[in-house]
Structure formats: structure tokens, C-alpha cells
Image (cartoon, rainbow, N blue to C red; front, side, top):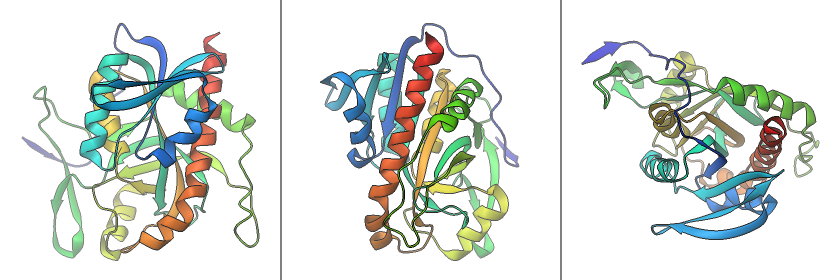
Length: 271
């Protein structure tokens, strides 16, 4: 069953039986280590073969784990950890390429919407024809997943309190921004200029990466509130290797620092 268009996920109530716990995932240890360092009373554990770190941020019980790169790894770890821990919310942190040219290295985008840009039929000129297709419940799977409203409200409060690190490695230096925006995901590290133009035309994202769209989809089916926090590293390009290596450490820190601020705000709102 195929329905042309770009279907948007409807709002859903959180599932019953969720615990007062925040699950934070990142693709790589570089993206999660600073969040781990913020944990009080941290201890390490394993869920099967997969490691995690648990502790508290602002009194909030928090579990942090790395998924590995790509949508398959992200979906696998999300399902495994979400079913085991039953978190009240799941946050995805890390870096992403800057497909919106106005986003700078270290700017943080909070995913008001998270989507998948590689689900559809690729046509002439690298233009994608998007559609809703049959899902696991014989439903129509969305492509766009709005962030959880409660978590977006918490993020807005956290933005007012949060102070990013100065991007002193750039000339002139600047203070990165944190704002709401749109994040898109697909299983390609580098893409052509034609694909970049089509993604911008149809989806208008600020950042592009390789995990959060699938994490949002898993959370939507499981009824777990989700929000993505990503910071811009390299610009979106065909061969990003060297730029990614140079710019991703600072971006990782900014996303992680804001994620810590957000968990702290969640903790305050739960008291």
C-alpha cells in the first residue's frame, strides 16, 4: 500500500507504565561521553552485549548509551533499551551536517520535527518521490515525526538558561545558537549536490544525519516521548571526511552540553 505525499505522524499519548527515567542515546562515544561525565553516582552496566552508563542529572535518573552509526544500529539499540528501561522520555544527542547554510559549526538544533529523507522512490535528477507505505500494524507509516510537546516546552525553558561554549577556534569567534528546527536522517554520509537541493526543496531541514529519523519512528510506535538534539559539524557535502573530523568534536560538546541542560530542566519540572 502506497500513498503519495509526506505523511506526518499524529500526536500520541505516552504509553502506560513508563518509568521516571530519561534515556539519552548518541551514535558515537564522542557524542555521549560528556553526558556521561555529568552523571552523579554513575555506574556501568550491559544490556546483553551492549554497554550503558547510569546515574542522575539534577536528581533525574538517566541512562546513556551509544547506538553505533546508521539507522539500523539506531533502531536496534532504541528498541532494546526502550523496552527494557521503559523511559519517560528518550533524547537523541550528537552531531549532524549543516544542510541549512545559515547554521554554523556548534549551533544546536532541537528537533521540532525529525524526518527520514531517504524513504521513497528516487527519480530523475535525484529527486525523491515520498510516500506513506504500509507499516507493522498495517497502518500508514509517517515520514515526519513532530517532537514531543512537553519536551519541546522543556527545551524552550532550557534554551533560556543555557550558555553555550564560545566557538573560539573560528575567526571571528562567536557564541553558538540553540533553537528549534528540523532534522532529517538517511543512511548516507556524503550526498550529491542534486540530492541536497531536493531535500532542501521538499523538507527544508536545518541539519542532516544518520540516526534520529529511525529513533523517532521507533519511539512513536512504542509511545515513548522523543526529542532530538543535534549540533552542526561539517556542511552537508559529497565528501565530508576531513571537515567532519575537524568540526565534529566541538559540535559534539555543544549538543551534549545542551542535552545535560535539558535533562536538568526535565528534572526540575518533575519535582
